[in-house]
Image 1: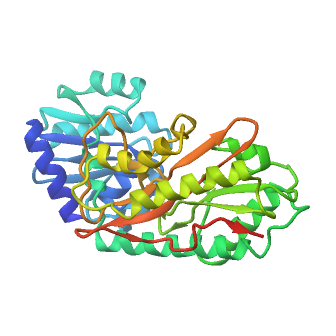
Image 2 (image 1 turned 45 degrees about the horizontal axis):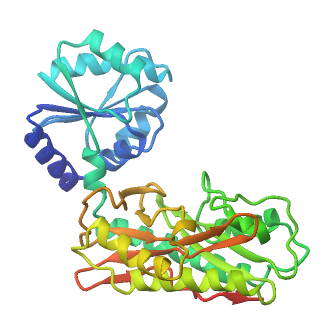
Length: 359
């Protein structure tokens, strides 16, 4: 946690603020280690305090090295915690208090603004910027979550058959993940078969799998708080020529990007290597999903690839690449893998086959 605080304090210096308030759930966990659902962290150049309510006081005291403050109401009402935040801001001598503009709601901002003499300064993505580059411990958690997800895909290949519903396939994936040390909460598997595979986020339904269906499966596992996320396509028998053409274009697009990916690339370069093949094959306008995204405590976190921004890939970032093509009313396909960025290139963390599996 010490290095994380050092990086955050450097950004605070650059913004010329003498205090930072963190209330975003994942950012609070990342910077303090506290995993409860209600808490606010206050950071200055030489102090760090975690404020929470009675339910989490003992838990926070064990999980974080910061000073833990119990707010007086002893209730679970998140709004009331800002009474104690204002007291601590005064005690810590904070005059310019940065807050996470995408995580502090209007009501809480108004309440805090009325309680403190400190000037509230909006900030954006300070902790998220630190989170982009993973520590060795984080990478190990992601390796395990990727291994569990990869094994779940290999396992479900022995289960998928005509007559099962998409929901039954999704349930088998989730059960396998849980049996093997992972969890799947908040990330229900996508199992989209036949014409439903044209839905990029087609959550599993009661549709019955049929001979000839091409099936897009997109899911992940969570291990010790860290996510994996992969997409694969299987076919019950040989797919029709049109959908096979779609799949081969998607696979070529993925391979073209992943085989060249390395530290130093910009958003635009990542997108270009993926999109070149889709343009060449005439499918680019049918590819509505993004290029890929960072992954860690959240399934989707920075860097979020965009041709409109200019981020640089750094060693020890973990990202996904996920080209997809979707033909309305006909079907579609997506391939997605977990990739650890290195100086020389990238390491694939989910190595199960990305070739079309015909069952």
